Length: 187
Image (cartoon, rainbow, N blue to C red; front, top):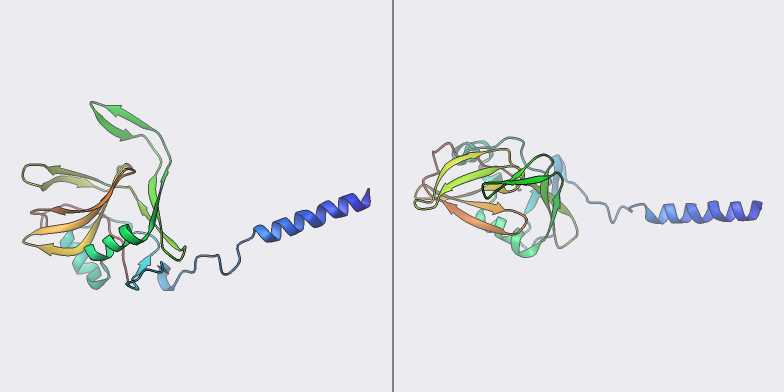
């Protein structure tokens, strides 16, 4: 009986040790929470987004060259694996989907297996005729909107996503308007 118990303990110990992440499988975070995703451009992304939402002008003034370009966002779309995670419950009212509680996010996994998280914690209302922002905010849970550093003729380019699509979009007349979107930084 002692041999059986000892054998069980030994097997459990071996299985436990094998299941623990090794240094080579742990995501290595650089200084101040930045992570190398192994992208061809060498862009290093912060593991998590900034807490507040910002207008384009505020984001450029606050973060300058650490705000990703539309090209850097496109590289994430093209070179990374995007896994959608969802917590909470939804309901439909008047043809619109609303979230009761919980968070939704994408785990964006780079070619080397490291990842960043992009939360779907915003909303954006765009007038389809003029393609201008008519309302926005930092809560929601169904869609995500992240600023890029690119602007031209008072239009900005931004990352837009939900569980079914990921794209770079253009928003007109938004440079100075109080349209606040999420910010995720790069090095």
